Structure formats: C-alpha cells, structure tokens
Image (cartoon, rainbow, N blue to C red):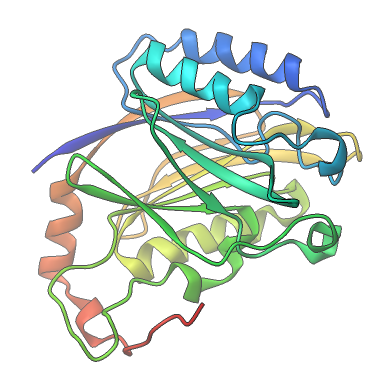
Length: 267
C-alpha cells in the first residue's frame, strides 16, 4: 500500500494584507526540511476571513494563484488552501489544488456562512472536488462545509453498490473561531468515523480584524476516529506520513459502509 506525506501549517494571518501573508507563508514553506508531498494552508490564507472580495479578490491568473504555482514548483509539492477569486463577475471562496507541474484543480465553498454574511458577498459552489494522488483520493472542503455531513458523505452510487468508497482523506481548511471550537473538534471526529477515512482539519490562530480569536485546533484523525495530531493556540508546522493500508484495513475489518442508505446528491 502507498503512503502520502502531508504538512499542515497552522498560522496567524495578517488582516487583509496579501503581500505580508504571502511573504510569511513562503518563509514557513521554505523552512520545511522534512520530505513532504501535500502542504495545506488555512482558509483565505492571503487575507483572513474578509467580506471584502470587491477589494481583494483576484482572477485565476492573479498574483496569489501565480504565487502558489511558483511555490509548488520550487518545493515540488502539492499546495492547497482557499482564497478570494473573481470569476466571470462572481466572487468565490475557492480552494486551489496546485500541482508542481503548474496544473491545478479547484473547489468553490458550497456552504456559505450566513451568520457572517458570507452569502451576501460570495457565490456558492455546486460541485465536490476529489483529487487523486498516488492512488489516494482526497476530498477537499472549506470550513462551514464541516457542519453538513451529507456533502461529505461517502456515496455508494445509489442502488449501484460498489466495493470501493469515493475517497480516503477528507480535508477541511478553515477560519473557525475559538468560541465554537467544540463543534469543530467534535464534527471532525464524526466525519472520520462515519466515512471511515482520514480527516485533516487546518485552522488559523490569532485574532483577525473583526476582533475574532481563532484557537487553531488543527487536527488529524484516523479512520477509527482517533486523534493522531492536535495543536491549539500556537503556530505550528507539522508533517506526517499517512498509510493507505490503514484505511483499507479498517474498511475491510469493519465494513459498516456497506450497510449505509443509498443516496445521490442532486446538484
């Protein structure tokens, strides 16, 4: 079975200061001495969770996407995280999945956080994004998506029962406030248990321009729901090697997914 190496970057962010954030993150990424294959940044890593896309959003050929392409190529890693994107007149909280060869995929945040008026500034996505790396399948999501289990649920293709689940790793990049950290920690574990997959949650730390404090609580959880990495409050760069065999063993020994209700997400 194959292994895959992930690096999580839990960091403070400079409020609505793209240049400062890109400089800071470049230094952090450059400092990674361990071998790694996928580097994960928080949600809106270039600005913080800002409701000013009219002022800060970029197009897909803009500075931040090009920065990601450059860093990914130089470090020879997949680089991912979300940022503000303007596309055909709409604004998106878009996760970019940048490959070292310059190719990329993306995911537009499906569930917009109405409590903070995100739905009044951004357009909701309508397609899931599951990347493929070395035989692994990785389902990418953004922050508030965590509260909606159907969107992340492993599908058995409706009535067409299969012996293969959709993904092996579920990623959430976030700006999730400390005041609701219990929900963050609980739901990450629930997603791992119900989907029998690894779950990786990468959150920011520090206080943003709206005086909201983020405690990080970045986490890696195995397919049994056991926490194998957790960090609160402090900045951290953490690298871990995950084994595909662990996913396969859990699903083979405890094939609970075979008893799941069939469903199809109609988008």
